[in-house]
Amino acid sequence: VPAPPARLEAVGVTVRFGGLVALNKVDLRIPPGSMVGLVGPNGAGKSTLFAVLSGLLRPNEGRVLMGGGDVTRATPQARARRGLSRTFQRPELFSGLTVREHLVLGDRVRHSGDRIWRDLLTGGGFRRPSKEEDERVDRLLEALHLGGLQHREAAGLSLGAGRLVEVARALAVEPEVLLLDEPSSGLDMRETEELAATLRRVVEERGLSLLLVEHDVDLVLGMCDTVNVLDFGAMIRSGTPEEIRSDPAVRAAYLGE
Ligand code: ADP
Ligand code: MG
Image (cartoon, rainbow, N blue to C red; front, side, top):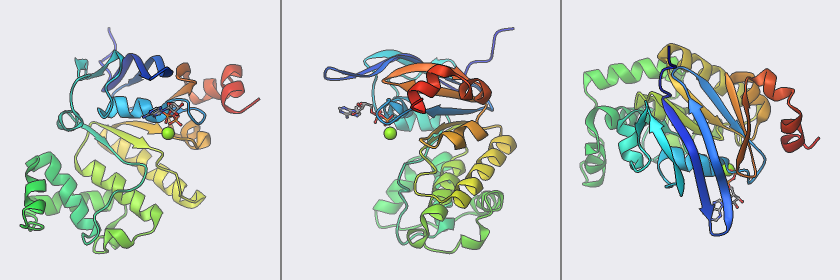
């Protein structure tokens, strides 16, 4: 039996910036229901691969597939409609809107498409949520234990809480695959552990696929099924956390041993 197509996949992706080869024939698979990690030293090409996968950057060579279908030339918006959602390294939250309203906006991306931006930008302001919207948002607030913060203005939150809201908003879009760019950056150990536990839970409950791009290797090794290691634009290893932990090439490249 052939393996089911990956939710999201990079095949032979090469990206050059002038003379610099930032990614060299890189492969990466995110199968359904799996948590996949991407680690590597500074400058290895992690953010470049993230940009290629999310559609912000067109590779010089190679392809990006979703569910086996070619999306190499699809815009980020088109990929979002096919079930891809992402967070940003710095939470990009709207001041003046509450946590709850942010989740309603995420929900509208999925259920009402681009109309939400017209509503917001044409002075219509924030349209009152429907009963269905409220119910979906209630479920999400509960799943992420954010009920206590729902009426707070998002802009006034701590970095840790803001990042949870950012994840919650990405989940409100009901993605099939979620890309997280350095979700632990700026968080303390306790906040990082909370975020990790939340991500594990939503992946299990929603059958979601997740790509975690992180400089925190321990976090990735502790929570992912498969870990990919980039070094100088080349994917030097993909394997289970156990395989990665004991791999001499990885230790040499990444841990400086
Ligand atoms: P990482 O996220 O793993 O730290 P990046 O993907 O940001 O690595 O960068 C990979 C390499 O590509 C680095 O050498 C970086 O300086 C270079 N690079 C990244 N973006 C650009 C760009 N827009 N223009 C030129 N060089 C870039
Ligand atoms: Mg980076």
